[in-house]
Length: 204
Length: 192
Figure 1 (cartoon, rainbow over the protein chains, first blue to last red):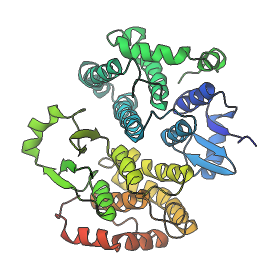
Figure 2 (cartoon, chains in turn red, green):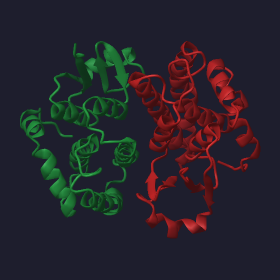
Figure 3 (tube, rainbow over the protein chains, first blue to last red):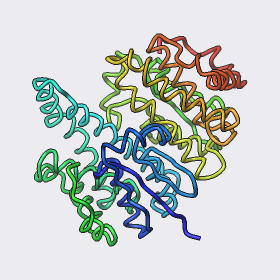
């Protein structure tokens, strides 16, 4: 019997979107639950560690979006050809996590002067530092992240690069043609293309 | 032939210690290279993303501490019995990663709110899982958890684990594993 999956998150792309992209590509059905903010306080204590997204299946509940992506990636043969490729998926997704953390710190900054300083630092140093190196990696992998083939890491990157363009502007990836090509290719994949056409349009 | 390993990190426990725990528990030898602050300046540009730790396996460079831990755990059979167990190991890690950055400004909030919130859940989990974090058996999650919590307690200046009976017992058990015990007795003493 087929496993019934239920994904719960807020009404946004956020941390859940890479998971939704994986389901769309694998063409596996799942319940895409989006809760409104007022529902969250009563739901929070029922989650393993008070956070979303969570995935439920076979009577089990689990959190941690990257862990979920890795698990589904393994199930659907999207972890490359061997343990070294799997490792590279982890390395590159966690590296992206480091960059996202820096961007997150800028976005959460309350003090306008410090916020502007962080923004300038990001635009002039941190982002180029990471994206230039990642661009080189993608160039060497035929416009994929790992092993010259599609892996779950590409879905994480596609979702983040989409957000990156929303934060920094549509031209933000122009200097990184291979990263841009990666993102565009993922969004053109069968299953994903249909998902993007019908998914809710949300602020984040 | 077995690969040669060299771990490169600062001379602290921090993000390197869980990796060291995994090597020691597995009984696999590795070079524990500790880089001084002065030295770091010259080494930094030679690293993939300007950060530590990095592990060299037969000269190939690997970064990202969690990725390294998971990779070694799989090799050394410290990852549970199936993919669900492996997922559970992953699900336990990120609490510390997410909060590590906040510790400096928010010690009181960590001690009074976040630590009790998370630790009471981990306490339940250890209770339900036969005294381990995942499925009644030792995994890298247990080693990561204990090594990292020691660092966290040192940074906070408070033993936040002590009030959670199952976690305190868990910590005792892990620190008493023969290889871990031997390592902890001889490892360099560092502030965190």
